[in-house]
Length: 154
Image (cartoon, rainbow, N blue to C red; front, side, top):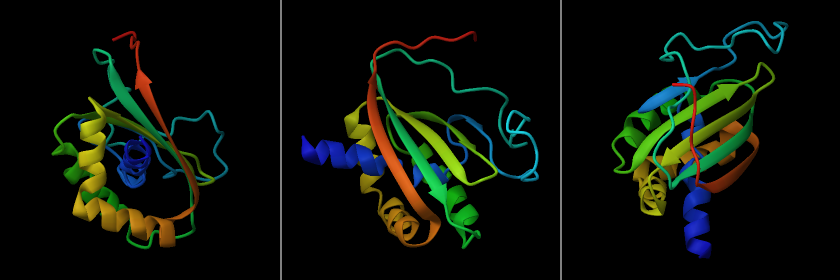
């Protein structure tokens, strides 16, 4: 069970860097730091809404992070991880947002634990996770949850 937890925990360590993949909604700190917190923070590349509900059960991997200063190639790596995670069988999509202060939350949705483990085992993702621990994150937390109900307006 510990290996499954570790696999799930690492699943979005760099998925947090991924701005969009599959069905996605993202926001980031591309606006002024003095803009109100409730101001629209939408990334112009986002398709316009949250990831739609899926037929449960499935898994949500929540990656909350506090970024370090500077890009240090973070954006390019995020784009590459977006490409990679889309190819994982069982990846459903993700929602992502970042405040002007650097707090980010990304929720990756996966059909099952095997999909999470496949993402964790991706060689480029492993390298990006290691770089994230060294360069991109002051702190992070990963939560893994089995979704039993899912609904929305759309």
